Every structure is written in C-alpha cells, then in structure tokens.
Image 1: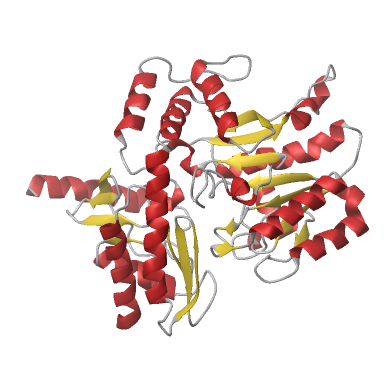
Image 2 (image 1 turned 135 degrees about the vertical axis):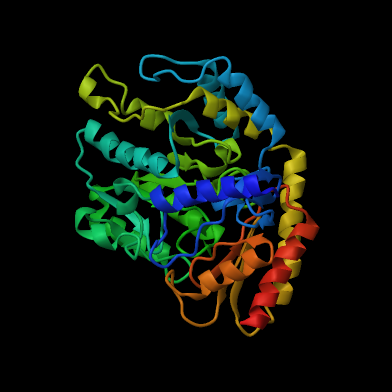
Length: 428
C-alpha cells in the first residue's frame, strides 16, 4: 500500500473517530471500529490489507454474499430508471411485483404487504396494526402478549414488546404494559398463555413471537410443537398472531420461513434483514385479507396512519426482487451444507468443558461459554478481538457465541471459523 493511500485511510478513519456515533457501542471503552473498504462473497477487506471471514452475515443481513452481482445489477438498472417516489398516492412496478412475489412465498393466507424501512419498523407497523384492527371494530384491546427474552427492535413499539433488560432499562417507564409469557426454552409457555387467555382474553390484541429462534435474546431455539400450540390458542381465542421473522426469514432456519417449518400461518408476519440480500434497507409487514379489511372503510379514521419517506423505495424493492430469485434449489442445497458442517464442528466443540448448550437450527449455530453470563459479559469482546486477529468477524452477545454465515460460505470457510473458536477456547 502506498504512503498516499495510507494517509487517505488515516484521514477517513480519523473523521470517523471525530464525528461518528456507532450503534451498540460504548465509545469510552470499545476498541476502534474495523475499517472496511471492500467486500466480496463471504469476505471483508480492511483498510490495512487484512481479509476477514464474515461469520455473522454483517449483523445477519447478508444472505447470498457481499457484492452479489445479480443484486448489484438490479440496483444499478433501477437507479437509472426510477430512484424514489412518494408511495402515498403513487405506486411503481418494483413494489407491486415484490409484494406479489413475497405473497407467493409466504405462509398461506398472508395476502397484503406493507413496506417500510427495517426490522424494527416492520414490527412497529405490526404492533400498531394489531391495536388499531380491534379499535376499528369498536373493541378496546390494550394488551399484547410477548415472550421473556424476546427482542423485536429499538423503536418504542418494538421495545415495548421486547424483554426488559439492559437495552430497554432507560425507557421502561415509557413502554406500557405487556403480558409476559415464559421463554419456551425455560418454562410452560403454552400453559401460561392459556391461563392468560382465561384471565384477560378480551383485552388481548395479539401475541408476538420470534418463531423458533429468539435472536438477540441469546440465540434461543425453541420447539416447533410449542409454536403450533400457541398458534392454535390464538386461533381459538381470536387473538392475532404476529410472527417476527426479521431474523428467521428467507431460509435462516432451513425452509424459507420458520413458520413454514412449524406448519403454521400467522395473521401478521414481519421481515427485513435478508430481504434485499443485505444490500439495502427494507422492511415488510404482511397481513391476512381479514386484517387488511379491518382498515378498509368509508370512515377515514380507520386508515392506518403510518408511513416513512422511503417507504417502498424502488431501488430497495428491485434489490429484494433480485435476492428472491437467488433463493433457488442451489441456495437450499448450500443452506443444507452449512447446517451439516455446523453439526460436524459443533459435535466436536460440545466436548469442550467450557462449552454449554450447543444448538443448531438451519444455518445458525450457537453455544454458551461457561462463566459470567449475560450480554455484558466481557468474554464476548475477548473472543471478538481474538477472532479479528485471526481473520474472522464474530460478534458474540456476551457469553453467547454464534455462527450465522452468508449462504455462499464454504465448508473450508466454516472449518476456519471453528478453528479460530477452538483456539480461543484453548488460549483463554
């Protein structure tokens, strides 16, 4: 690297240090952020010439690999045609076709798609829709049921239905009541929900869950039969079921959607993260026709008064459509290969005395490190730093270690990731 290039790199990283506020970062103690200048496939290239394996799909969004040429071409073509237009009162082909293509893939019965910006706003739309659906029918249902250890986003409605903890502590008094059910990995969720319905059923607008995989709450994997029982309870009690598939959508758990894996169809389903293959921000909230009809009225007060400036951005919609075309049989085979490799490596890791609760669901593998538990456990930062020094990008959640790679990740790539984890276990 030339001295001029090095000076340029120092210039922009100095600007970052002086002006940028990073997410989920304590700037008083965090190490300097890794300066990334290029990405391709499963690899990230840093300003100082290092190459890192992206073992976490860059915060769980990169499905097919970085800089995928099919999606990049779709973005370029769309940008030359229509970049942005207000979506209240206007429409465009990329959004209309994307909605139709999503409906064709989603669990049966989901027929309407509301487009937004990201996962948190997709959940925000779902929560507001659930409350207003009943209000439009003249029923006061002020309560939503949610799971312990859930995480649904950082906007206020999404925080309200997320578990109380370090993420929400400064805002708890502003978040309102939620009926909290036991985490399915720890308690009798179904029994508690049935009791809640008996006691407060007429107040319940909806139950919201992360189906089968609770991501930021610790990569907690829970049984399909529990999800089926919860869906049955909702159906019998006429309570809306919201499935937050922001993480689990588009093949992360094996099938395209975790709800499909369990054989259930929710009333409302949220997606984001992988919807564009990780190329651009986009969220979507899909509902049944029954829910949509709850807002169709000559009374304008029944309108869903929600929207964003970049709702249904044509370029993002074009990226999403291209990403969906890549979810073909070859993609399904690559996901199976990743799961198989996870199982081989995790079988070996499971014998280590510091490894607790090894678990795998589709392309996601996780385990807990023995010792101090919780998101603030320092061991996660230690592993992240060790992995960076050895060519792998990991971001443990405290003592919870997970591998969640892009679908282009090879068996050799995964072997390298697990070797680094094993070396850390022996080094520390």
